[in-house]
Amino acid sequence: MKPAPFTLHRPRTLAAALELLAELGPDAKVLAGGQSLVPVLNMRLAAPAHLVDITALPDVDRVESSGAGVTVGALATHRAVEHDAGAHEHQPLLRQALTHVAHPAIRNRGTVVGSLAHADPNGEMPMILALTEGHVRAVSSRGEREIPAAELFVGPLETCLEPDEILVSATFGAAGAGARTGFDELARRSGDYALAGVGMVLATDGDGAAETITGLSAGFVSVTDLPERLVLDEHVAGTPTAEAREVAEAVAAAVREHIDPIDDIHATADYRRHLAGVIARRTFTRLARTNDRPRTQEAHA
Amino acid sequence: MSSEPTSTVRLSVNGVDRTVDVPDRQLLSDALRHTLGLTGTHVGCEHGVCGACTVQLDGRPVRSCLMFAASAEGHEITTVEGLGNGPDDPGPVQQAFIDCHGLQCGFCTPGFVTTIDAYVRENPDPSEEEAREAISGNLCRCTGYQNIVRSVCRAAELVPEREEDA
Image 1 (cartoon, helix red, strand yellow):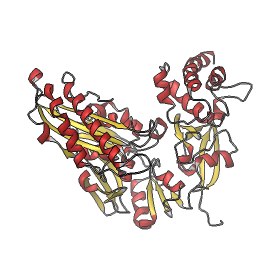
Image 2 (tube, helix red, strand yellow; image 1 turned 45 degrees about the horizontal axis):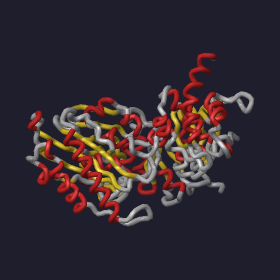
Image 3 (tube, helix red, strand yellow; image 1 turned 120 degrees about the vertical axis):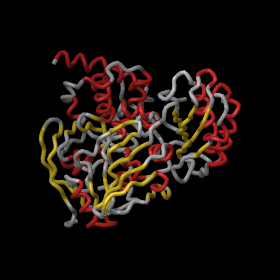
Image 4 (cartoon, chains in turn blue, yellow; image 1 turned 30 degrees about the vertical axis):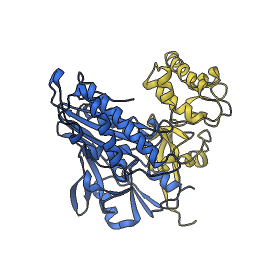
């Protein structure tokens, strides 16, 4: 048997799940799709005494999209969000990044909200939540609270969630009118964790041939401790999109300056820093020059 | 371990309703192999990387090593045994692997067959590039993948043919 022994609970209602978590305290972990938690258990990097499997809970797999954002229920799989037309229309970063999350068989089972609770700075979903200034809804038997992305993530693999709380949904901010989004990353093999990845939101005044950039923000995968949103307006605002190339190196330099990659067996910190700069420059220039197809333009290498 | 927590799980495996008593910590892959004797599902890395243990959960490929048997309550599982009738009557994806020489040692093959069976039903006319992407989550150390990519495209021909015949 791979994991250490535990008792698996499979409650049928949210109230029952919350009651169990309140009773079991820090000895329990919430299990949803399990695509991050089960490997951790199989390698015995964690040995909780109880698992509260929430996959039998009703009505928490919805994906609802509007101009206000994309709200994803706790059991919505990566696949469901990737293929959701409304989610793609209102926040294209989701599909753009989800195609890089592991492999189809993992995305069939893994959940977007579970990825947020896992809070891996090498993961795409935490970065998208931070970049779109989203929030999550956490519920416990004590009540419920809304937590902004900037407060949710407190360290690598660490959130501000209490042991008795369940994340019941996450809301990603919508890409506003005139915003274009892009995501790209580089990994050793398809589906591996990225050596470096960059998501971007570019805003313009939408003024046809004379179009001018009004803002730029970026988020990073695998090169920062925490998922976060970096505002790059000062380097690009006021530049016509047709002349974006002239400020692209300033964008790349600001990214290299900001991030804090580490050395590991896959790459040196210097190499990751270089890659992040290259991906940032390419993604920015690609977004800037696609002014005939605003918003839903995909920026892939 | 007499205190090992266990659960009684009802699930459907290859169209047959089964009720099994399993330790709570037993992976679905181990329940299929050890408890149900379905050793067609192979176990490689046991942390979701290699794809050898892929089965279909309600028709969609998932890693059976990244799921507990107790979490499969009420679900339909299809293993490689459910996608053919043995050596004399292989299923369409198995036949595609035979036609294209898509295997050598065969260890990874059950995971490819379950993955590809679901994939060609969703994408009946894959390009070679799409075929590569479809199998990107399955590792093979023998073939170099060329013949597996061909097998995906061949399976896309055979699956609808078999269904018309049926």
